[in-house]
Length: 412
Ligand code: HEC
Ligand code: HEC
Ligand code: HEC
Ligand code: HEC
Image 1 (cartoon, rainbow, N blue to C red):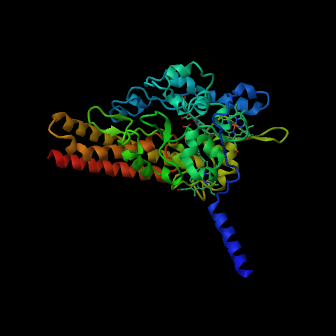
Image 2: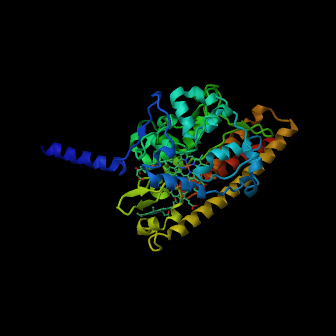
Image 3: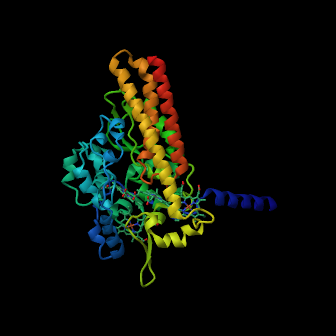
């Protein structure tokens, strides 16, 4: 009796430690090949007016910053790839179809619609991964709206449903332990790649643990993971011959990664979807996705419990300080990588060195740029997890220095 009681106590304690506080709100997984058609936002206008109206409000986030002008070294780092031609910052969901239609980057295949419209999500779910290989324009003709209710709820608004099947694979057995309000956003705010042969949108991890940057890099570097048998590359820099990985927008992997201050406490929705109380007392989430810094109520009632100037800096000061630090470090390492690129390009241009001789420098340059890009493309600029951002930039800097030394040794 005594023994089983203490066993029970130990079990309860273990559960309390292991199960995150939000385990009560997991997400559903979309049913595929079920013959459903997408219900669009306008279909829910009457039933869910507040979610519909606030969803439309995403049009207010309408600014695009030209990254190529703001960060001149990008033309060198992304040379030979679309991002060196046209690279503007993200803006509100409202504009996503317009923005993909306007981009100067080439996008021949339908897979570029993956994170843009439920019309394509449903096409993949119904037809299978062959849909990723369709012509981009063929799908364009079928697109009726951008990111919408179906993207996060399927046809049951209010219930979080993961509708992007690759994202179900990306979490593996951890799926049910992650709050639906994190999984919903993670479907697109993640690091993905197009599988070289099937062209299917795919994620380089299959659990929470394997989404650490170093584990993903090891995955990309291991040719046995790809149908081509070669380490993965998005493109090859034409002057250096380095086979590069372009990181995308790893908000989920960063916020949920090691070192995050708030991954166990708050969800993406807590910080980016303000709670609003109607006259009858009903609480809903604003579907206008904004910065927590614009949410005075959240700051006053929740964040200021700690971020109040005595325990921690005020929230706005904390975010400003973290972002300034990470931005400065990102630019410093970005410029170091641009120098390395020029030096390596010069060595390649002489024609004096074989691919075998250049292999080590190229590998170091590839790995360094991967770690740097992991931070550069993350949209919170350090605020989601500055420990991880710092760690990645440190790795990028030291790999870059190793590449410069190896190159100097070769060309001396
Ligand atoms: C179906 C894919 C998809 C899902 C799901 C998604 N996003 Fe996005 N998000 C995007 C895309 C694509 C953009 C960029 C749109 C553009 O620039 O045209 C974006 C942009 C944003 C922006 C604006 C960024 C900026 O720099 O101004 C915010 C904020 C944002 N998303 C937050 C969220 C949150 C929070 C969630 C979950 C509640 C979420 N997103 C779910 C695809 C998605
Ligand atoms: C603890 C609060 C918090 C949580 C939880 C959180 N974020 Fe953020 N997020 C921030 C802050 C702070 C910023 C920086 C805002 C600013 O610069 O005004 C930010 C910025 C962003 C941006 C860029 C927005 C812009 O306007 O530039 C995106 C996109 C984003 N977060 C997505 C996510 C996603 C997806 C998740 C969940 C995986 C998430 N966030 C979880 C606090 C949070
Ligand atoms: C980018 C993802 C996303 C999109 C798009 C989206 N929702 Fe939501 N929705 C959420 C999240 C996250 C929650 C909060 C759920 C939670 O924390 O359990 C939510 C909550 C809800 C709820 C529950 C009540 C509330 O407000 O908290 C309803 C109803 C709802 N959404 C309807 C809609 C409708 C209708 C649309 C389209 C006009 C829509 N949603 C579009 C992510 C989304
Ligand atoms: C229970 C206390 C507590 C609450 C409540 C809290 N924070 Fe924090 N927050 C912290 C601590 C501790 C840190 C780490 C401070 C440091 O490293 O200097 C932190 C750091 C941060 C950072 C910087 C993250 C990083 O990795 O550098 C952001 C952004 C942030 N909090 C946003 C928020 C927002 C938004 C809210 C309200 C939704 C909030 N916090 C509520 C304790 C809290």
